[in-house]
Image 1 (cartoon, rainbow, N blue to C red):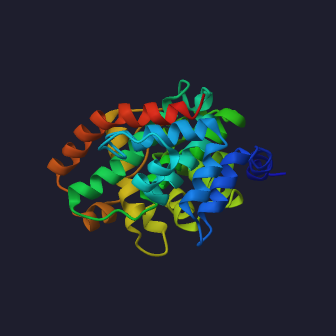
Image 2 (image 1 turned 90 degrees about the vertical axis):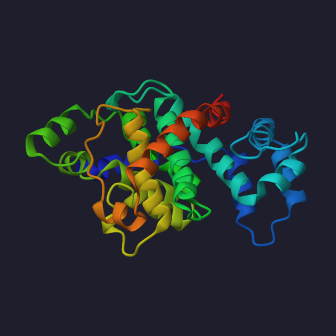
Length: 284
């Protein structure tokens, strides 16, 4: 068995999202989804109820007057925001562990994921663009492959980093040389198995190499640059650090100025504390 096959076999043994999360996601995927029925499903799970209310009352996601019921929260947030929170509630618990292979303390990878998600949406606003609905969710999930490799499979990134330095190649290329797969591809494969929608899977798969995507994708471009901005802030940096190559084509397509990059960096440093607090609640 090759190293790639061994990694995939072990990764497929990892449990899927908790059943309450799966139920909500399945219901949201129903074109006839009804807010009243959805609120009842959420109310059966105390953790989801608390997080939905916290999100609806936060300045980043909701704002305005306080809401006290799940139904009111759903009306304020809409199905897309609820979908984001539910996915986060299912995936975030995986990020509470120390990611030993990548030199990340417990919770650091979640911080980076939150930074990517908030940077992606904030960048769209800064550029006067409308971010596709799945942008924030995809940003939250970009590190799921690294979580699996570093926590559950205990892959040691040290030799990968050494090879990247010796050969002057990107970190994900070195991952492929040593492991037969990189963490972005592994994450995409797992999300496919968990029935996460294709647009989100594609962003996770091509986030490090957007130029390989068959066609331009605004959500992918925003998340790619959001990831770069998050790394520039130093939030949730592992030993792989900046060992990746940003796409010139993406920066050209989005036509980003240095001033806009700086504005997004400043904004996420202010926003991340509130968003992180909400999502960390889902890991408890």
